[in-house]
Image 1 (cartoon, rainbow, N blue to C red):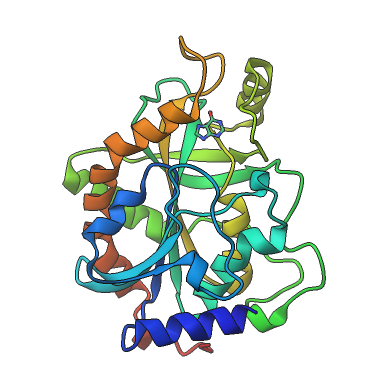
Image 2 (image 1 turned 120 degrees about the horizontal axis):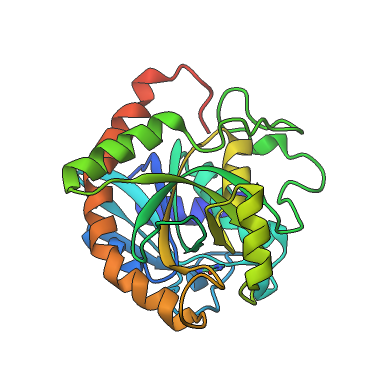
Amino acid sequence: QVAEAAAFLKARLASLSPRIGIVLGSGLGAVADAVTGPVVVPYAEIPHFPRSTVEGHMGRIVAGLLGGVPVIMMQGRVHFYEGYSPEEVTFPLRVLGALGIRAVVLTCAAGGIAEGYQVGQLVALGDHINLMGWNPLIGPNEPRFAFWAGAGLRFPDMTEAYSKALRSLAKQAALEEGFALDEGVYLAVSGPSFETPAEIRAFRALGATLVGMSTVSETIVARHMGIEVLGLACVANLAAGLGATALSHQEVFETGRQVEQRLSRLLQRLAPRIAALVDPAKDEEKQP
Ligand code: HPA
């Protein structure tokens, strides 16, 4: 099924062969507007592809040039809380892997737990804590997804789940854009209910600075395939009990709208540098 979906997309992409994947989270979809020469493919047209049921998630692939280099973007993702199985949630990432991406930028909205976070701030993920209650690799190991050297293991190493090299490129690019990119720890829950204030206090004690309902499953599957990951979270709201108001998807979505232009400029600056880092000339490794 992954192979079928990948073959379908490969035909639609024609001569474009992106080595960078980008997943756009809640309210962040407009980053895709910065893609030039876009090839747009709604998820509904792709064989076996799951469809996003959440407002604020467009549900289409946008491939083309970003900052002059080929990228493939997912405008919208599916989540565990929508009722999708682990396989379904991570299917799109497997397809991007089969298309030959070497690095992926996972963006998401998150609740801010750390003191001092401002709503609308971007934070690079330095690490995560998976409290979703599941792992997308549960089941028989799938070495056929080992697209790069050392990948496809039953017990993938997660010591550097989020690439240090990509993170430092992102911090540098952010400084050039005039803002500082903090580094945080993202704790993932299944949702869809937001957390209680007691849960947030517990998560802070565990070392989390951000909380969200996505991303970690994609990170795990990407690492299983040997793909480098950059995680970028937008602090969409202060986590439960920390702000003055109740939490709502509306707020999450609206913060995203305010941040997406900044994220878009950051990614335009960053894409060519990521491309240089994952230049095919630099790997003697196995390719899909
Ligand atoms: N909690 C969980 N997920 C989220 C939040 C939150 O506060 N904000 C955006 N996504």
